[in-house]
View 1 (cartoon, rainbow, N blue to C red):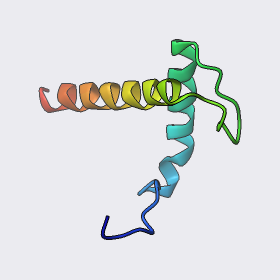
View 2 (tube, rainbow, N blue to C red; view 1 turned 90 degrees about the horizontal axis):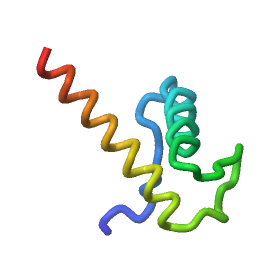
View 3 (cartoon, rainbow, N blue to C red; view 1 turned 135 degrees about the horizontal axis):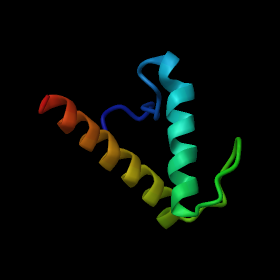
View 4 (cartoon, rainbow, N blue to C red; view 1 turned 180 degrees about the vertical axis):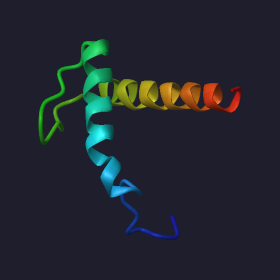
Length: 68
């Protein structure tokens, strides 16, 4: 990787709370025990399922917006 200092960051800081809420809702729907703060005890499968579902829903919403 050319830029080793790259991190996962929210490009629009004001959106962080909304993304955290969205992540918590998805985790709850999937039955993943997500808690405030550190969640390093999640398995890769659990974490991936949350992120994957978030991406699927964001893509679906964008596609719906484009079809209006």
